[in-house]
Amino acid sequence: MRPSLRPVLFSVAIAVVCAVAATLAVVAATRTQVVVGAPAPVPQSSSFTPGVFASGDATVSKKPDMAFLSVGVESLKPTASAAQNDLASKAAKLIARAKALGIVDKDISTSGYSVGPNYGNSNATIDGYRASEQIQLKWHNVDTVGGALDSLVQQGGATQVGVGFGLANPKAAQVEARALAIVDARTRAQGMADAAGIKLGQVIRVSDVSSYGGFPLSGSVGYDKASLPAPTQIPVGQLDVQVTVEVDFAIAG
Image (tube, rainbow, N blue to C red; front, side):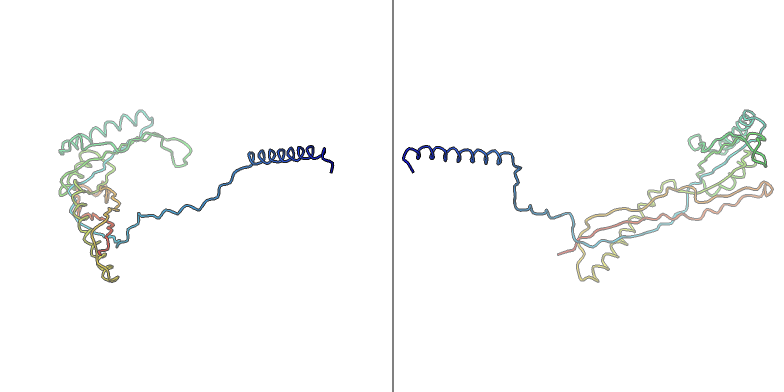
């Protein structure tokens, strides 16, 4: 190779190397970067505490100390206005009788009121309008509830009557039953611990899982005016207050 060609070839080689380097730099800049690392450790849950878990049940029976009376009147007239006016008179008479028996205003409430057409046997034509009103009364002496109902029917004009019983303070009975249910849960847990060969530790959690339906209306009685005026007998009986609890115990070391 002639000496004069060497500088030219050397310059060309440098240019080629620079062009390739520039191309690689552009490609590297536009390529999506992927970072590979060691997987993160899965966190371990610390919320579970080994223990002995048991449920307990208890029932406390109490004599009701309150009666809930449902009394109603109705009217059937050719027009809605006439039915409503007649119903108002009957309801006023019934409420007046309730107050005469000693029932105070706060223990008297309307539970239902309706006015609507009354259809004949064919269910195609309207033969009048029926109005009705249902009133709820609280009676605080369950031993005299039969006489109260007789008076509301005979002197008050009630034609729709029902009665149920409840407790004025159901929470007191629930507290008593709950304490017994916890004792029952501890007895069950101790039996499981003995069977498993472990020692029962302190209580971790206590939960009341009862479903309280609220007391009143545990029964009803109907009236047949043909059977009056024989005194009405309403046996009171007892109400069962049921409580279920769940108790978690630690395992003693």
